[in-house]
Image (cartoon, one colour):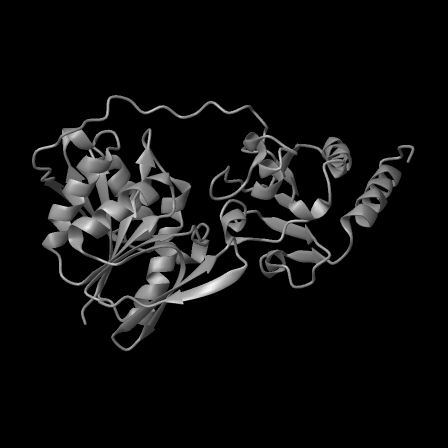
Length: 331
């Protein structure tokens, strides 16, 4: 089957989303395994030619632009209408969307209007001849699930971010850009305004070092030690996994992961974090990841550059003493 991989590009305020930037290298990998003829971007908006050219240049893939004034701001009805009309005219395809608020909002509508199977949280595609199956992690990384659609003609999925393309993956030649007017039909709604939530400034977005707390730190008292560690490390900020924020040990502004912030510091120190895929999606671009966990089988060790199997309550005081010794400070 001559199946195409189509990638939806997400953008806001004239910038591509981090989730979008992680799709291209993954699509090229799957393209080779599937024997697809091509991977192609589709981007919706109004006068977004600059972004389309940036996509074509950075990824080397062709870009289709669906242009319409009603697509200037994200609107679920308008996006679904434009994509439905366009996709109906395409051959067999796999549509990959970022696993973001936009992708999770849009994908179910497309699945219904196109009669196509849909899976959220995809981390891997498998091809066996003409057959296709998906792998996703369920229950916050506690199990791995493999799914197979009944039909292979049209399939769509949201993909958990897989990191930035490496330098060697950069294309030699840019893709081409094709702009066409979008067919929206008669819309019943329009978006008046989009506002980003104003979160408290935690310094996570610009920190050179992130100290991240997970449920495995034991209790809220351990945060005192982590805050002390942050104060000893220059340019550091305190982050957390979702369970820590759910327990109100730290505010939601500190949460890192799919439903929190995305960070890419020079050094990421993960204390008591198991490594659910939802958390990894927000920190796996870190240049150096050091994980401390007493469970030697914790998923975080699969992405960590350095892993330490130890009890946090014993390791943290020893680490603080050693840092103070190196700085000539009283223990």
